[in-house]
Length: 129
Image 1: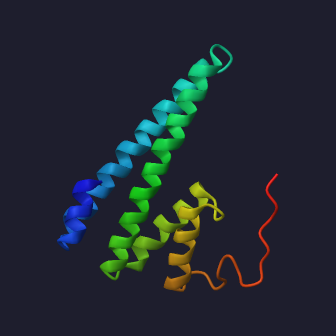
Image 2: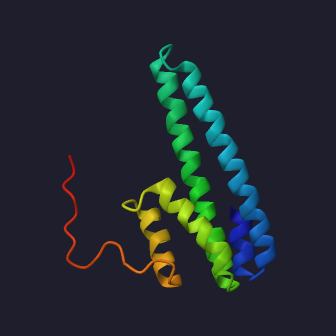
């Protein structure tokens, strides 16, 4: 991710795309491995299963952050057709109420892919349980 950030700063978008795609792939694989381990320990050792679930969540978060950065690079290259599917993936993965999900949805709104802003003016947030 650091190399991708440096590449973006240098406007070397092709290198940034390569590094971000690699990061997405690695983070996705790691998240899947942690999920598999969590499932293996489910019902056997709750602490290990919980730890693996937490690690799966953390690496999925990093994957989604890499995906968001990749979408921004595609926007910088004026390639919304490549950015939109990535942004939709983030909204689905993160939920539109979480920070990264909101940011991804805002990008979709700015691109004109969606018509309604979120949250809308006057919306009252749902109470937290």
